[in-house]
Length: 139
Image 1 (cartoon, one colour):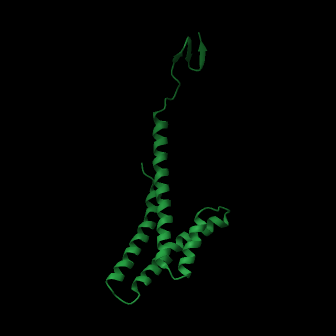
Image 2 (image 1 turned 180 degrees about the horizontal axis):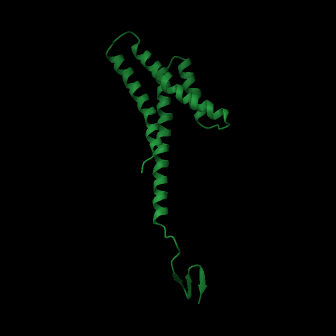
Image 3 (image 1 turned 135 degrees about the horizontal axis):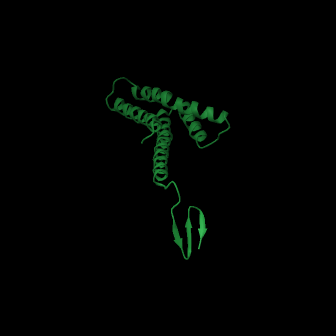
């Protein structure tokens, strides 16, 4: 049983990858001068803005992690006029988060399967000359 959260987190790296590809297409097929940078800046604003906003909320809540470094790099890339670099950082950050959620869902499913397969009551077993049955030890 897959989690819907993994699916909802998967669109962010997908959008970043599509925007990166769209910028390269605009560079190869010259639609207008600088169309590639416009596409990359719009994509960075859309996808990077989400990452930056989410990280700022976490920092205000007292949670500091590697997300802070990625957010600083995204902001610096935008300020320094490197939208492609910012998009690659967004792709790495959101891709890692999507993989993390997918793995978490798989691990939760495995734990649930183990819990379902576990016996409800302990069964009798013989260890040496002791017999353990329903939590009573007898000889």
